[in-house]
Length: 114
Length: 114
Image 1 (cartoon, helix red, strand yellow):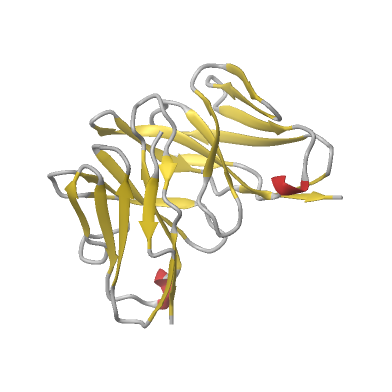
Image 2: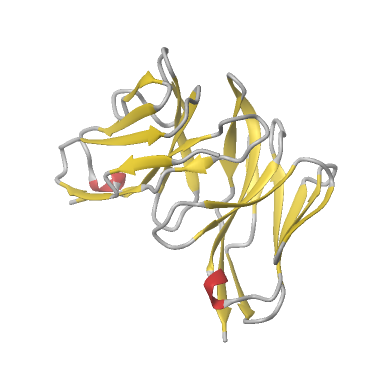
């Protein structure tokens, strides 16, 4: 199993500013995944973060808007840049420690942009 | 493309049995997961199927037919606390280093009534 500490749990931000979300895992994992969950919707993958290389972004998401850092095997950050109200969502990080295991999620960050 | 369908909402009575269906069409398949998500919280793992058949875990069971691209989650002896969204997710694309991406359905909001 894996325990993920994600912070902040929630924030209210002004449009045009940026917010960095942090995830700390209690074990070393090669891949970390960042998801967005808009109100009433399911989870959409933003990007996959591999330690030591640039993150791989899904269609519709770009590095300038959602820069990701992955400095080591237990930590990652996602920044939501130049925020607008449309960025109001829950953001979740996730790991899957092994190919035969389920994905574990952080507690989520509930972001409101005003 | 990836497509995972499940009903948007369901209502069931406390003590009853409910079945939540999920159909999928994905480019790859390495297992199907069911997650429970209470409002404002992160998803929590319920079950995992990679081979055809039924997996039972207490009040929850999950079934998979890979040839039909079909799964269901069965909840028995429903309790009020089972009111939540239930997410069907397929592990499809390989991300490297032993990790796979999860593609989520939009979720089924289950309301349990007295």
